[in-house]
Length: 383
Image (cartoon, rainbow, N blue to C red; front, side, top):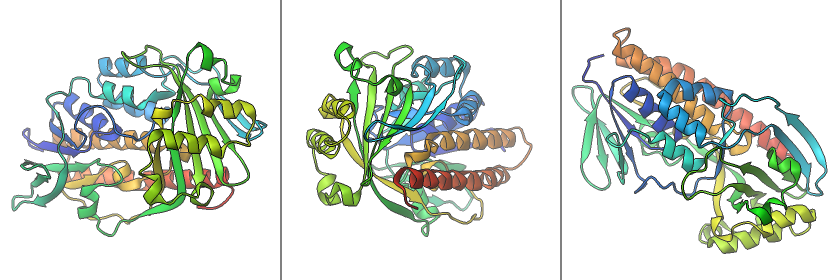
């Protein structure tokens, strides 16, 4: 692979930024284009679980000082995953004692993105929406932006999420399935008063609560190891309900303001245990927003070329397995390793992309399947 090889990345989420860090660290020419107008993240969630695979990928992708920043801004380590009935009866618990301090168990999404952006000010370009690409006669890739202009590189990596413009063009037959679940994200700032409301186990890690009528809630604390400026410790208070239980059509749900969504969430748990009702009652009304829970349908391997995909752009999965971010990080580490191998002259660029895709596709859709099975267990039906 020639020294002047240029890598273009569409999408500045977890996977795209980790890849940019790894390629920049390896000395490659890389440019990342993100449609968000600024580093402040859009509504995608709050607390992200990082597993051992995610930790390994971060160590592979990030320079030591960036990894240290990310680790210091992560949440204090959790040691519990548990499930409860809506009457607060524990039905499952798994503990993870003695997690080393250098292992990250969870991060706040905004703090994580800020850390991953470290040192990339000349690489990441905000407010640039990729609208399409063309393969040139020389085999390079030209990308076009909705705002005007474009760029040319030797490889385009679509890390642009569920609405991926790269996927739409590369794999127009790929589909994403709506699971009929709606998630209303919210959180409760932890202070002296609200901290006293949190059940002890809920302050130890991720806890799932479900009733018998298609409604569940996810709780998880984020107590920063080193609190970023302007941030507060919080408890994630996220409601998940079937469309039937929610009884609000999407065309209305996705236009509701945060306070209305908070009130709806509190009403849906009105017959739950008082301690659970209190967590929703004291949640921050302005933090609530809805998302659809979806999953990518498996796709067959395609002929490798100068365009590839990463993370949710190819293998979107429901959050029920806690694997989405971790799988994207693994994609980034695998792709970076292959591209750096090509940069050393060990293989061609296209061979590097093909080797990445042979690993990424089965691994990604295995994770999708696992997340769907977890959703089935949580809601008592197959997805």
